[in-house]
Length: 264
Image (cartoon, rainbow, N blue to C red; front, top):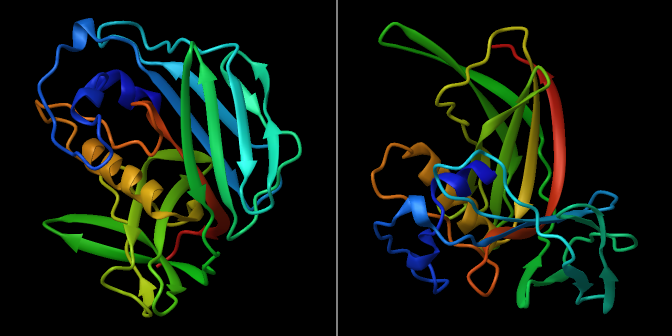
């Protein structure tokens, strides 16, 4: 994930206000380092991890300085409990007692280098992933195989999803974020179109489905578009859900996985 912040560092100037999506040309060689916070809480057993680092100039080596000595807390606002995280390695902070629960609302607070950053995320209800099938497409002499998650979307509730694929124990960088705006209450069978990584018959796919909240969906939806438009001359960063112009995200989400053999 941090490669994105190297390539598109300092685009926060265009994203100072959460709702603002305008981008501007910037000087990547002399970018002022910005804090990057990435954290997740899931309905699986903890501990959960928050990583804190700094952006680097575009021409620098791909080494992101960790932010050490931060005070990091996660509060379960629903249960009114707070957990102070422990720095287990430079820039890596872990929870001790807090447990992710569907429907609960969580606030992450980071105090680092004299600045405070906060973000709140609500864990949605889990939507069951029924199965994973595959669709073979042949066009212009090329054949591709795409995974298709199958699940029933609840009626009348906005839902947001993120999918991650691992093929033969190799996690793909590409991910997929979409919502049910055009498919509310329907049975969803949506292809996950692969840009560069294709399946072969007999491969093993581990598909992870996350139910995320709206702000987290917006973040990954923008990031997905940035990655797919990687040749753009105007760099950008996805709109973070974290305050004080931080980069990154904090997500409370459900997780489920299905491991299947690729067949069609």
